Image (cartoon, rainbow, N blue to C red; front, side):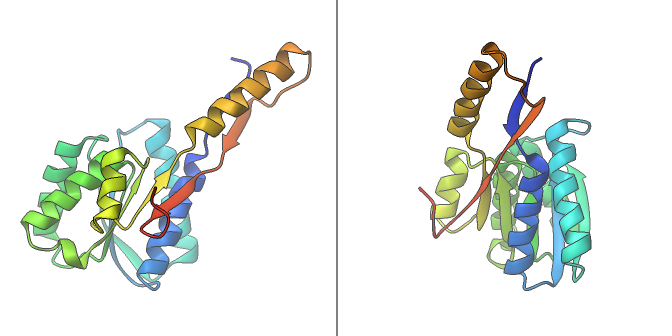
Length: 181
């Protein structure tokens, strides 16, 4: 491999944490739904989220952290169990939108969705609709068009004999009700 052009998942996890911290005004009880253990996306998104929370938002307590394998059905089941075990949940971050959409469904069924701020990752179509419907507060958006543009640019530079970086991180953005497409 010459160069890897990809989303900066650590920065994305931090972006989600910063949003959730501000939405909770720096205090509350939060759940983290993790992706498939050992994958770089789960590791990096979790790292960014947890680093920000521990360093910049110490008033927020992560009361539950469990894997739901990037899967909506598992997100629902796992979150049902967490809802039963945790009488107070103020916010939830999931390493992808599928898991957060499952968690929202579980919270709605339990009558607790209105009191929890949900934040996802990937900005998939269903998540964008959930933002429009005001069920999902925010989702971290990757920028595939920018990744493609940078990939072509790096390939051209490499083929022209230039040195290229081995890793090129691509910025992410936060989608909320204010800027949802």
